[in-house]
Length: 155
Image (cartoon, rainbow, N blue to C red; front, side):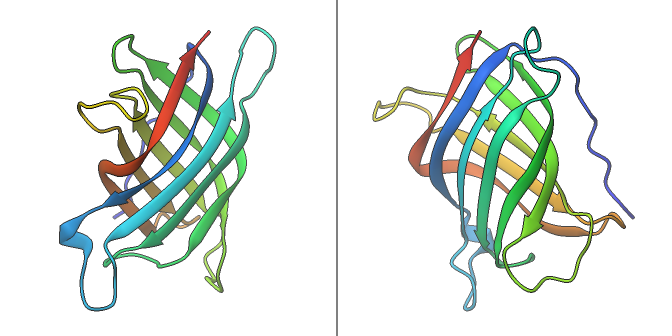
């Protein structure tokens, strides 16, 4: 059974950027660290550009999923909302950094900017899922960032 992530078509961001690492204890085992890392820089101004631009990079080392890196080849949709903890959803196409044979990889990512860099408070949250063209889940994860920071800048 394939999972369908809804597409959004609205955005009020001009830029989302940052990097960091997420640790999920339940995804750690003898062969997996339970970590995934992200690095991204995405811009979108619908008054100027028809589509978002930028890059998304995800590296995974968790149980129950591919252990490799993924890099965006296109950013197709961005949706964002919120003032006090801006949240953004990004979707697009990606390629795997290893010898995965899956074709038509697509990613979906959610990021919540819960605090300023190096400030006390609620950690930023990152979630992602990657599917192939047949709808098979290749990798996924969601959790609080243990280090790093995400910035979501409004227009």
